[in-house]
Image (cartoon, rainbow, N blue to C red; front, side, top):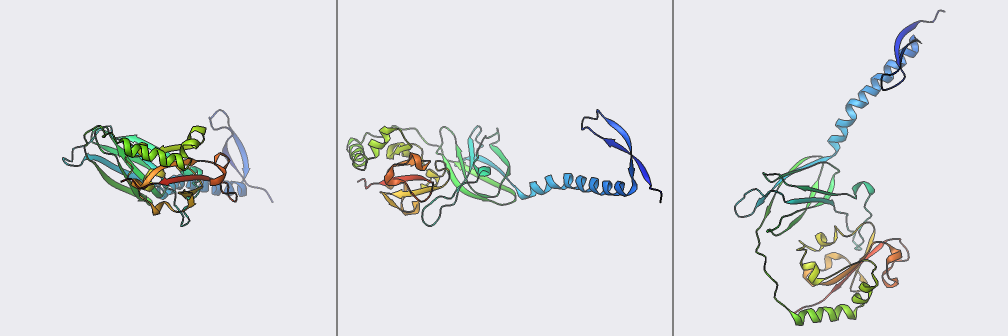
Length: 266
């Protein structure tokens, strides 16, 4: 039997530097056509499929009372890892360990394209306005939001020597101040927390906690849902077990620790 051949252009380099003619058996040629069609179909379909699986967040930032657009507001989007019933923050996958940030345009607009579906903390800040933080659930497709910031007057806080003294005394009694001087971990007391204007407890800690974390409140494993921001006297966060003091390290899992101290200030 005489084999049938087709003459085809055989490309050996993507930069078109080498193109030669080669005789290819008809059966092989049919297979090549099938493979070429499949590759072309994948190249055409895959980007569209990937885009369909992601979310697009479009929005704008306005002044609360006048609805005027706010230019140059800083808008951030950060994945919010779920917190289990035992108060442990679940591990954040590497592809979600992103801190997206953008500045609003002259009309107050912003866009976050190609975001993986999930729960995120969306925040907006601008000098002269109270910061805003909210949780948002993103599913595949386009989402539109409108954020309104309320203007604030910058005033000096009254000096509260008694309250400050009581706070420092309480933090000293629980060992907070001593561990802070050792230089391991991240520490904030009530006064420092107040200057960040947290929306709630979860919005305060989500930007800080990275990866698997065990939660301690007043030295006992508990959930962050058990407390409010104004009850926090201070917190100490250790990203890894090797940095964590022995009394707050979990020997069974290689996780960091968040230690929160509460107080009653009257």
